[in-house]
Each structure stands twice: as structure tokens, then as C-alpha cells.
Image (cartoon, rainbow, N blue to C red; front, side, top):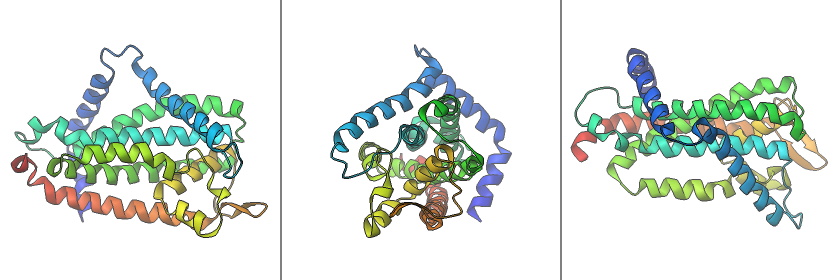
Amino acid sequence: MQGLTVVQDLIRYRELLFQFVRRDISLRYRQAIMGFGWAILLPLLTMGASLVLRAVAFKGGAVGAPPLAALAVKAWAWGFVAGALTFGSQSLLSNISLVTKIYFPREILPVAAILTQCVDGTIGFCVLVIALPFLGAKLGLAALWFPVFLLLLVLLVSGLALLLAAANIFFRDVKYIVQVFLTFGIFFTPVVYDPSSFHGLARAAVMANPFAGILVGLDLALTRNMNLAATHMAGTRILWQPTDLIAPVLGTAILLVAGLGLFRRGSAWFAEVY
């Protein structure tokens, strides 16, 4: 199995993986005025932009705006997605001199980029946890769902990053596609709006996005203390139903298998194509 082989390679080359993560962290913040402050500022900027958009787009009340705590959680999660896909998709090209000259499992590079982003995300999350009670969040036992959705998010992004990193070697315009996706993806993912405002097929279309179920799950578990094993309603509006987990789980499995498989097949040609 491809997945088992990759895991074994990552364990075997764990010291090299650790060195890449250390190097990436050092390079990212070297000579940066704010240092690790960027890990806090970028989610705040995403949240600020979302607040402006919310004030303009939801003035008429046609689509419900999420509470401030929900917006903070989803902005943090989307910031992780944006950073991981940006650096992960560029990881092979950024290290092409190593790829063409030295043998090592190529998966280490995008995985190192994602682990580096996890460090950023951890710093931002620590600040988020402190801020959530002041933003009206209701923390409780439902927060135990957080590791489940976090694991899904990391695996989903990992599969997508592997796929994009390999494709970026063969098609150099992939980096533009990634930027377009990150720029407009926030409008198709419930970051600045609440999918419970939609009904029927409209809500199903929104929740078909694998990122949607993960972000909504993080929001409801961390800020509204909802047990996600049950259905939750607000009047006639569906806040959550267990079937909302189908798209994240299925999407994660498909992208992870496809990403690992295509990356492994393409890795033999990385040096030749470049």
C-alpha cells in the first residue's frame, strides 16, 4: 500500500524531515520584523477582512452571518489551509536542486511544509483559545471533537498539497491556480457566512465542499458546545447533522489516496522533467 510505504519512509528519514522543518521555520522568520507574530497577524487579517465583508454582504439579512467566535475559529482554520497549500505546493520547486541531485523520499518536502504550517497554526490557536471566551464562545465537552476535525483538516490539506506539489513540477501554472483557489475559495467555503442559512439543495451544495464540514464542525464544537454525533436545529434551520461528516471523510480519503499515488508515480520523473 502506498500510504504504508510513505509512512515507513517518513519514519526512516525522520531526522531529515525534522531538519527540513527546522530549516523552513528558520527561513520563514529570518530577518522578519514580527517573527512568529505573523502566525497571529495573518489569521487576524483574515478575520478583519471577513468582518468587513460580513458588514457589507449581510446587511440585508438574506444570508446569516456567523457569530464573532465562529468567525475567529474558521478564519484561523482557513489561514492554516492557505499557508499549507501555498508552501506545500511550492515545496518541490523551492528545493529543486536537492530533488535533482540527492535521493530521499520526495514526500518529505511537502510534509515538512505542512508541519511547518502546523507550528504556525499552533501559535495562532493558543491565542485563539485565550480569546474565545471573550468572543462569546461556549467551551465544553464538545471540544473533544476538535482533534477529529483537526486531523481531517491536516490530512485533507496534505493530500491536496502532495497532488499540487507534483503537478507543479509538470505544469508551472499550478501556482496561479492555487492562488485563485485561495482567493475565491473563501466565498465557496462557509468562513464568512453560516451554511444553516441555506435550505435543501443549496445547503447540500455548500456542505459538499469537504472543507465546509470541517470548518463548521470546528465552529460548533469549539464555540457552541454541540455534540456532533446528533442533529442540531435552530427553528427550521439545520445547524448540523451527522451526514455532514460524509463529504470531509470521503474527500479526505480520496485526495489523500490520489495525492500519494500520483506523487509516487510522478516522483521518478521529477528530475528529468525539470
